Length: 269
Image (cartoon, rainbow, N blue to C red; front, side):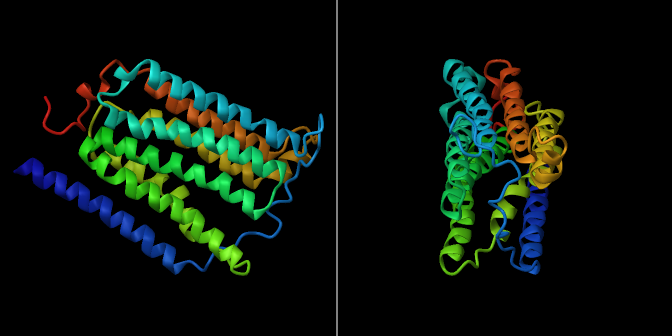
């Protein structure tokens, strides 16, 4: 009974923090797409490819996604069952689709193609959260939440897209929550629910590289102004690939049947 009460308290903490995040979002004014968003610093065409470095840098994401998919297909014992493996596979498939969507977007930058850049990102975000839930809280919780979280992620993009089509009044608040709240939720789950996988420092690397990617994106023009060699947006793709490489590294380092060692498996010794 004490352990059940402790589990309930931890769940209440997560639900309370999530409710606060959603409530705070409602207090923020609508976030509209910057009309100049598509005017990235480095628009150079090379070898006949428009916005070449922003296009080609997506290869880094494609390669890391392929490595992750290959790892989980060749060594399925890294996760205990196919149900456990699904969210981790979806992380890498989401990244693979992001690389393709981002390539399309940078070839013809506009709001319509941007939807297909952002949508697969939400697959990766929500699947990563579900993988952590499965490992630390329990497979049943992860299995129950995977579908709803993927739907929430997709809706966050479509809500913005519908608003843009309805007269350029798309609201990015929902999408911002899906993209940034996992940076709070994942460490919170790791702190509240004990278990050897994944380690907090490993997820620190994943989140740390992703934060640097977002900083590079914001400093797109300032970075490009230093010698006009590479833009912040191109660096964003490379740093995001390093973040996913950290996920690959984290899974690769685990022994076979890692969930047999985890505190997240319900009802197993």
